[in-house]
Length: 211
Image (cartoon, rainbow, N blue to C red):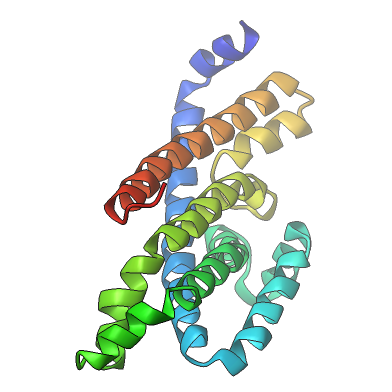
């Protein structure tokens, strides 16, 4: 009851924070998605670089999020921009890895047939390999979205907006109900997006006959 009451009493705060959280997360998702898919495509065509690139992304992923934010502050200042950069960096691992895995595990026989029919490298990539790898790529995209939304809660510690503001205010004022309310909204937003992407993933799997 206390959480429902605080949702009502501070509804303007929660609506503002929710919209800001969506904006920050969506921007980071778009940036990480574009960069991650392009990187995955590039390293799938230059496999000697794959180990190096995936290794670098893995190392970055092991850096604690609050430390990464601290490293970025002297370069990009405080606020939403730094939060978006940090979330984009963290979002790269699942999408790069899944794009690379999806593209490199397409049945070689299918590719040989396409090449035998006269398809060039670009046609093979975007008309055959990429569509067949799409279920794996969407799976990585789904993980990335949930992770970015969840991690967006720490953005308030560097002056950015989002639902982390409610969590931070709750911590600083010893208002655990406010902290719980902010956390619940982040979890619900992540679950909602995960559900939408799950439906998209199932649709793609049905399209390609994957159980």
